[in-house]
Amino acid sequence: MKLTYPVCCGVDVHKTFLVATIITSDFITPKYKQKRFSTFYNGLLSFKQWLLENNCKDVCMESTGKYWVPVWNVLESSVHVVIANPKWVSAVKGNKDDKKDSKWIGELFRMGLVPGSYVPSKDIRILREFTRYRSKLVSMRASEKNRFQNAFTVCNLTLDAVVSDMFGKSAASIENYLLSTDSVDPDYCVSLLQGSLKKKASDVVEAIEGFSMTAEQKTRVRIVQGHFADIDKRIAELDETIGNLVSDYEGVISLLCTIPGIDRRLAITILSEIGTDMSQFGSSKRLCRWAGLTPGNNESAGKKKSVRISRAGIYLKPALVEAAHAAVKSSQSNSYFRTKYERIMKRRGKKRAIIAIARMMLTCVFAMLQSGEVFNPCDIQKFDMPEELRKRQVLSSAKDAVKLLVSLGVVSEGMISLEKLAS
Image (spheres, rainbow, N blue to C red):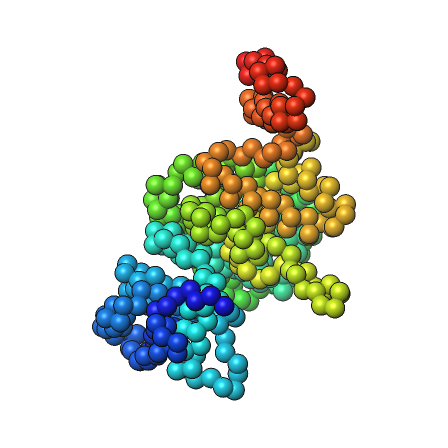
């Protein structure tokens, strides 16, 4: 194996301390220096000084929870730090401790056997914290909605079987009325109905009959209702802050919004997860594999086993799947992603087809961020597209055809004119 880092350091990080091993390979037998440091700020400064004194500019450490982040913050400006996924640097169980782990990480790293994890720039990391927290609050809000609705269900209210949205204006008015009174007046409930729901007045009355909720149950429902309203308020605050954070990336967001199915919110989520520098991934295939959208490769003795996608991309993958669902539900009869989806769905089923569309979209994102061009896939001329883009596609194909004919000697250069297509 080729020696990649003659002088490097392997770090085993814990909550209150870290163990570091510097490996120097100037001689036939590597030399090791090992030391333990505190993870408090002064201890990390001492660790950084120790690395510089030993002329060590390459460090590899395991991504243990969030414990690696303070170390990264201190070393980022002056040392090349590689964050390794634990599955690539795990030692054999039964023969490991902190010192051996540190040495093992350094040994793998110096031979170039540790693939580094993607760590975006600080401003993208800060944006990621907000978008991920927003995602958690949205999930929490959905849980509170279910809890609120179930509280009425167990009290013999089947209003959710009549109305399409338990949190619409009519349903919310009825629910607030039921929480504020001890005796239910069906006629008053009917007077609260709005719009097309007035046609279902008899069904609403039937759904309310038998409703019985104790004072203690009403108190619990009010608490859930208040929590739900507070979550809405916090999400609005997060949206305002996120809007300020992405002010420098409006061009990128507008570019991503040209992809069918991706709106501003999803564009910000994608931006916060992958950043704008696509050189970190190298190719669209590596990006899709990092996002967990690539089928697995598990084959032994000529037999293929599970090809399920991995669990990676726990925030990016749901956003792309949401965008894929929006794109394939487009009302346009010849929508690009909808046509692709229908073709794959016939052969592979709905779920695999949605994942395939999500991967296509991420491939488009990679190409667009790398080139700066709007959404314009190479085969879009087969589907509905703006006339200007269609002309550009046809002209590009014609130029390629002319180059091929000239290279084969069928025609001479300048014999075929493309002026009519360019006009």
